[in-house]
Amino acid sequence: MMSLSRIQQLEQYTIKNPQEVLLITVNIEEEMDQLMIFKGFSSSLMRPTEFDPDVPMLSEKDEIISIDRMRSPYNPNHPNYIEKGLTWEQMERLLD
Image (cartoon, rainbow, N blue to C red):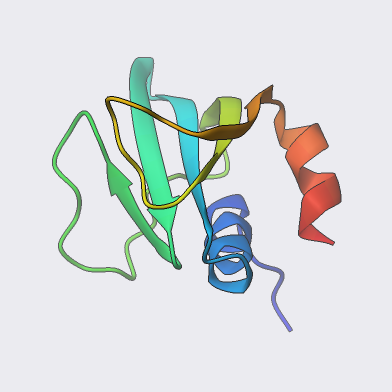
């Protein structure tokens, strides 16, 4: 079985934890972006999101700068943080 990409692992995490929203700060091709993942779906907050869900939002070469865990529903004016500024390595421990 092929292992899941980082973005797929994060999407799976939000399916198992539907009470959480993940906000991922990433560096994609030298451009900063923020991805939001909720209930298995990813979308970009800063650029158009690919219509085809099979096209990954993040490649393995893109750098994950930080991951914020928040309670859903997400309210941009009053985000309810569970944990803020996690590294990929810290988040990986929660994925197991």
